[in-house]
Length: 402
Image 1 (tube, rainbow, N blue to C red):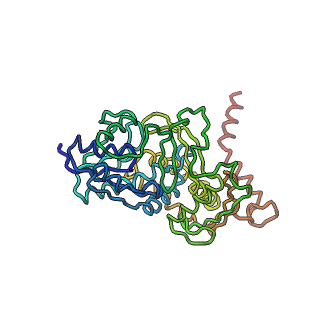
Image 2: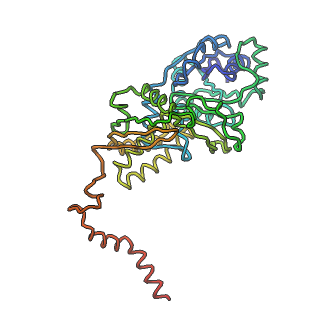
Image 3: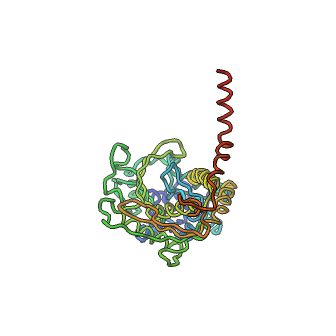
């Protein structure tokens, strides 16, 4: 198939800088660079447009997706309580649906006939991007250079760029592989490839170590309306600004660091360090509010939805009917998730200090050990007798057999 115009997900790093001339060499096509601003920071975006042009792209489109990321992915996912393998708050995988959708939109607007990404053949992201492409624009060809080209090292890519006279600031040595967005920053490679090696302080970029965090606790009051953050310390805050503020507060107090060995979708295990300070605070607050508002069976179901949703997001199945169904369930439950939670931050620890809700199922009148008129303790005898009926019958059968 003849490819005339390709939209490349471009970051300005070594890989995508090499992909631009490689596409022109191997497909004889026009290359349009697409840069997603998902909150990775001004330093990452500085000069990226000129860098793309210098690499051979015909144009570079920078699209601000931060608000979409928060309102359409982060906040809905928080309602489900999704945490992958008990620890990972899905920072990288949550950004992929909005990036892929915007890339497809640009390709269709410009009349491109192909999409390209710089994901390796070992990672999860190739599945996330291509799964989204298949759901949104199956007619477009997908090009994955890492599954086609002959390069196998940073040095080989640098040599290729030198041959093509493409300027780069990359070096032959790259200690860590990092991915940042508004929600988190991830770290892989270097000493982290050995799970017996404790991460050094040079791994972490956002958060203070708990040892270096302030010796005093900080308290943050979060207000929620139907499961979505509405105020911080009594003040209304826009979605993007809210995440930025919570990241700042959490980072100062050493909050949000995790070091995990996870199961990748493609079958191998990988070790990564993640910093998600604001997300850690938000998740703790929502779970504190859930404990006050959800009855036992509702909470159990929400936890089941959360587990399924975490797997779905991690596996890149955002644009599926199952996502819509699970999100509808979580959103329905979250209708009651309104209230205020005070979070205490101290040297990496996040605890719920206070919580209240107009929908609270907690009643001092029922929970108290003092005398009351709303709960007759004698009623418990009949309940226990019925609750344990199966055990009683089983024991009687065994006695008869004996």
